[in-house]
Each structure stands twice: as C-alpha cells, then as structure tokens.
Length: 449
Image 1 (tube, rainbow, N blue to C red):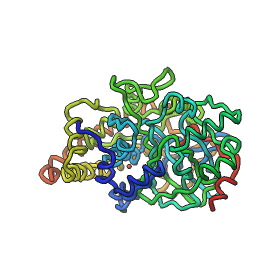
Image 2: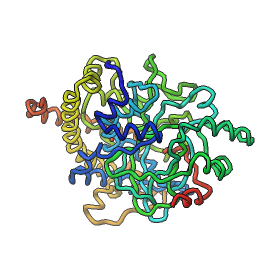
Image 3: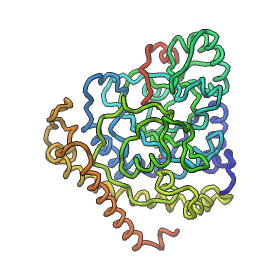
Image 4: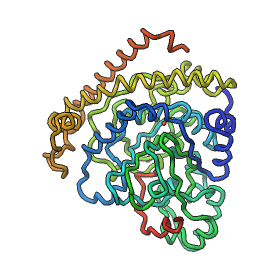
C-alpha cells in the first residue's frame, strides 16, 4: 500500500484550495465529483425515480413532524450503492481522516429528501460524544461526507460553525465550567449549551450550500445542523465511511454496542438496516420497522468498491493492486483507473435500474410506484394502514423478496459480464442524523442572514 500524503490526494482529486479550506475550516465542499452521473440525463432520471419510489412507499405513523426531511426507508438504492464505492470520493475521505486509514467500510444509512415546502428540518448537534472525544479521542476519525443530488441554496442546506475543530476542546472546558455534562453517544447543541457568548467567541452557524453533484467533507467535532425549514426539495446521500482496525473486525468506535465488520458485511449482503449508528447509538427509534424489499445488488464495479461494501477484505491481493493504482505516485495511472471504473459504474446502473422496476412491480403489484405512474393511477392510502402502499403484496417482512433481489442481482451481474466480454478492449483503455434533534430555536440560523 503506497503511503498516504493527504495534500497530494486532495490536489489529485480536488484542488490545492480545497485542501487549504479543509485545513482552515474543518469542512469543504468539492464540486463535480458526481457529474458523471448527474450530468447524464438518463442516469439523473434514474436517481429521481429512485427517490420518488422510496418516498411513495414511506408514510410514518405518528410524529411525522419530527421526520426532519429524512428518507428513513431508503438504505440500499442503486445511487447509494454507487456513492458508497466511488473512488475519488473515497480517496478524499481517506486523506481527510486524521489517521489516514484507508481500510474504510460504508456504514449503511438513509438519505435526506425534503418532501414539502415548509417542512421542519432544523437541528444542531455533533456526531460524537464531546466528553469522550476530549478525554480519549473517541470519534475523531469518523469524518462526515454527503453527496448533494440537487443544487442547494443558503436557505435550504447544511449549517455549521467553520473552524470549530480548532476550538472544540477549549469550548468543552468552558461548558463544563458552566455546569453542563455530556453522557449521550452524540452531543445535542441547545441554546444553553452553545450560547450567545460562545457564538461571539467561536462563531455562528452559517449556511454552506453544496452544488449539485458536489460533496461535503466535514470533521466530526464541527457543530453542524440544517436550516430550519425546507424552502424546496433537498436530496443528499450519506456514506458514513468508518475505519476498520488492524484486526479487520472492529470499527473506529469499537465497543459492546457497536457492530463489527462481519455484522456490516451481512447488512450489505442482505440489504438490511444496521442495529446501531456509527456512534454506537441504537437506530431502533429511526427504523421504519421493516427492510424495503425492492432492492437489487449493483453489478460488480471494482475490488475497492467491494471492500468499501464489506464484500472483500482490504488485504486481498486484487484490492491491494487497485489501491496501488489509486494512491500510487502516477496521476495518469490513477485517472485512467477511475475512468475505467466510472464506465463500469454507468453500465451497471443502466443494467440494474430496469431490474429494480421489474422487481418493484412484481412485489407491490397495484401499489407499485412504477405501475401507478405508467397507468396514471392514484396511489393507495398514505396513512400507514394495511391498505397503504407502505406494505408489499406479501407479508412485508422482506424475506421472500430478498431471494428475488439476489436472483435479479445475479442476473444483472451476468448481463454486465456479457457486456464487458463484448467490449473488453475498450474497457482496458458519491447528518448527521439518526441522532438528530430538532432545533429548539430558529434564532441561531436567522442571525446568519
């Protein structure tokens, strides 16, 4: 494995200015990473149809006002599978981690999909326990990232305190002196915890809108949240790449409450939601109660992609060979490798998306989003009842559909293989949230306007 030089990685896949911004602010928005998907009209339509499909089948029972724009049934869509194994995105995240650990895996997570004008979306927190972070360094390496599917603006985006990573420990000591204690796995930021004096001294939360197809990378000790109300649709995909320790089993925050490499391998294989979050906090309160059945495994794209999705070990020879291309000294070798993988990604998406449509119709029948769209039918009741489109025609458990999804995934992989065989010479040439709390005040954001 080549040595990781963070600034060189940023300059290879982003820019020198992006590296400077990240070092200064503890956060950076990098444009263009997913233009190869979102600038393609056909692929962009796939992405929007996937978001629409999951929203069609998502109707929470009770307390819908606390949804905060999260699409909590969307865990293994095709666009999420693509994002989780994107090579430039992955390389930048390795460079952004304080420990530069390249052995990362994607902790399954849902998406952001604000669905209506005026939807409550505001919250403020830190995705770590600030006490444990200061005392032991726990959580320091779990850098956050997000892909923006749509163009964001200052009234509909992430908000955060730039540069807070440089003063987080000092602020913590001051808060302790005021009598506050922090024992949760994450740190909720109320007006009492981060008061007017703190804002004057350390900075206010400011909007950081991300361009369509761009990514945001943010250190975990940065206070962040979201603008208070949706003023339009906002869509984002979160990878939650976490590090694997040298034993190739324990995660960054290893402990009795945290899942392991083997656990996450099973979740990616079976397309099931994890039991917890990257911080170790239980995800039970944020689950829809059943795994969405109409998912298809994306055909193979790269060995690194397999390792990121816990399908191969990081020390397997095919993965190591690709790491040498991606992180080696030759920029052109890395770029050529990425071009090949992106070409396979586009081909895989075009093969797998029709399989999703077919599976969706087969499992949901009259309640299917795609069938209702084709026939111009009204949707079923959207109240979470037995007649709601939230349920499939089967028992809703997803057990029988898992076999169907795997079968279709195998079929898609075979089709991809056949396509590659016929074009082999040319081939040789992508918040936060389960622990989010709604902001108890909009004054914080309004001060930034």
